Length: 124
Image (cartoon, rainbow, N blue to C red):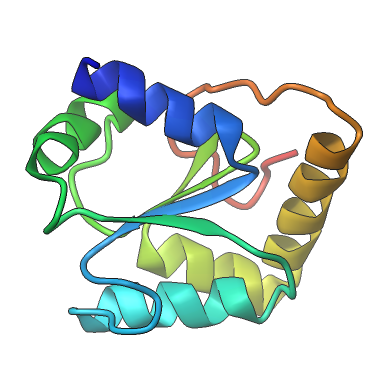
């Protein structure tokens, strides 16, 4: 499968996914570790991709998302951003709302959008 197609499937088939350096159990950079902590605080499961074990994803994701750095957090099929935006949304209480809404849509069978591009604090 083409890497961009695989990324699209991962983003649209998982309510929450983080493309990160390492794993949630063993993050290999501080930014990935902090983003994982924020996602865990939301109280819902999330998928992850260790970009060090997926070199095709590592190379293709910045072109797919138009976001150059890692980690990259997608919620409800949309790029939320990297570590700083994820932490900002968490501190504002928005991250938990976005995660809960994405999981509610997934549980009801509603499809995710698969849109890319940073959505920032005003995401709905």
